[in-house]
Length: 497
Image 1: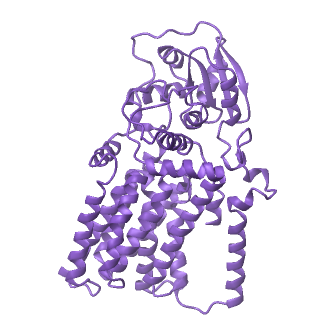
Image 2 (image 1 turned 30 degrees about the horizontal axis):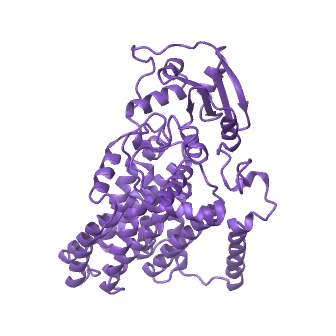
Image 3 (image 1 turned 90 degrees about the horizontal axis):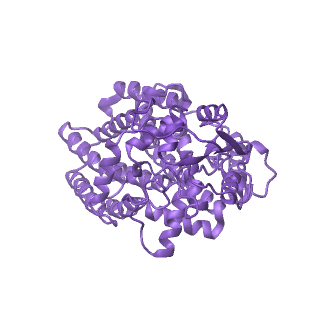
């Protein structure tokens, strides 16, 4: 958790959400279109995470990036702390097995701990999983299920992953029914099974308590079926297609451990656990954005399976040295405390642990990919025409200069048509970029040096373009001569699926 607390604010999914939150608080209404976009300003758009955006705005007013990062850390610690407690319950106090389980949960998710609306769903997902698991094993009364509708009402207005709530409860109910039919020793009594079925229906009904009602499910389905290139939306890439990514490797390793362990011990495990981990594993193999949810259920389930198996020396009970445990606990607590935003801003941390620089309060808490100084330059030297921007930069541009400099594209992926994303990918790849820029009358380029290196090389070798601005992270180019004209001919860059 201490390591996760070091994660800075990345631009993609924070700044534009903060701007929308500001707008909602100022006007008292939720925008209905692609506001701040130069190309899709009038296109209808549903702001699913409106409540998270309002919280971001309120916290930023209260304590800028420090407050938002601190909330992220509290949610992170609370979510995994709850899962650790649940692990200990499952393994009957076997601390080694519980720690191993929480380690599995963490290693598949540590790159998903950004400051974005998803962070509000961490604790809601963990709480839902813990409640249904505790109730299904009769450790808790069915009265605990009464918290689920309240969780779902919050969830559906905070993040699009709200669909996982009714799914988890429905699977738990199905698992309870299967366990009763196969006479599993841990099968719940009939009233518990019935209560789980009722809870799943009530959660589904309460998910309609949001500004769009049933429309949130329609929008969610549209997002699931709208496939984008991994180059555009990396979270949609399957771990099987990104094997060079260390997190994908860890995910597949944990999945392998789960498969091997559960194949050996499956008859002793509850059906709900087998179904939940299987469904989340399949979802994760379709897209990396499910990894954090898979990890949250996989850790406790694997830990219990290992204890039931009882042959792994690592988790066998051995008396621990009290002093060593105490020293380790104190050391972890001190490190965790020092990296909290409210404290780290006063510490002389190494430059490698700080982020951006520029005219932004506590800019060091924003990741180095935040184009603070480049956007300031663009504001002071506004383009004569529209401009092209890196997708991630679009988020910060919306917050800092949305009214003044509407963006070509930004992380609101569903807002932009597939054709425009294909064209964006072509431009970033430096393929047929001049003609595509001319199509949109773009005479300025704001680009990330690393992410846009193909385009940068192409522009730097073209005499019609001049470099106006450069820093360690960003570049701005301006067209100074006549460039290639738009035409009706198909672009040479193939469409990206």
